[in-house]
Image (cartoon, rainbow, N blue to C red; front, side, top):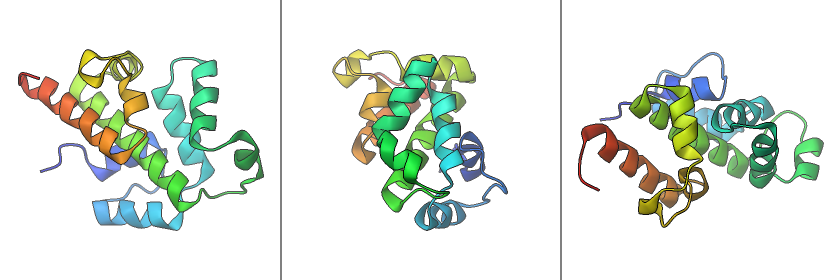
Length: 142
């Protein structure tokens, strides 16, 4: 059971129309998300302009981003979706975009002192962060 819907994930990326299933979202990611999806996700996740710049160019090098016309490649699209999914989950758990953003950008002891955002840059790391979020949501011991 997924409590965070594909529409909530897509909303973080400012996609329109919103997908109604994970299959539709997967199709969008496979086809290559628009560059604007990455920008929107970074806007949601970052607290400052400098954080936005660093995160954007961590996902896709600056020169590549500037050369890229309209669509991200498959790898960049997957990273963008992953970041949006983790943010949407944090937003659901904290019920506040500001609290979700703060959680993602603050070092956590259960993540070896790394930030949840940094850990979630890989799929396995994103799963660790999502597990941590659901444990917090349900009040389970970590």
